[in-house]
Length: 187
Image 1: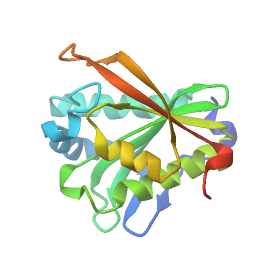
Image 2: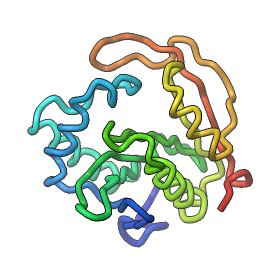
Image 3: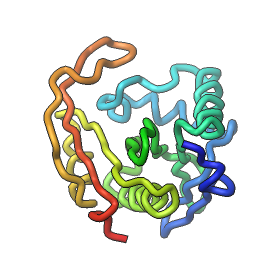
Image 4: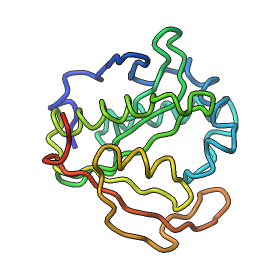
């Protein structure tokens, strides 16, 4: 998908408490810090960057992915300090379909921050990129993510047995597939 044709530049969005923006190399230490918490990476398909050097590499990769059109990954930054507290992305573009994914530093859980971020990213996907479907894959244990998606009217479509295998541990997890159509999104 050619973001450059649909988005003039990488969007910067401010909500009541957060700023969604492009990741910067100076975000690497904070990225490493919150990914070092097992509670953050437990339901993801990787453990996150293990070193500061790897954090720099990951940020460069995600930003190159934006330029190449295969991912748009936002830093979720505290609006006051501009410190990164998580990321949220759209990727796996196929036609008018994409996948949403996210993670957040544990100290910011249960504050409505991810709801703000998801709403804005869905809006970009449907209203600016012209997507018709946004889907999410959620591990069976990740109850909070299931609740969040249902809040935005995502529909549970199916149970995928041993669908996603962790890139570090090799453990294969059952996943649920959720989707939201542009006609179901509350603008």
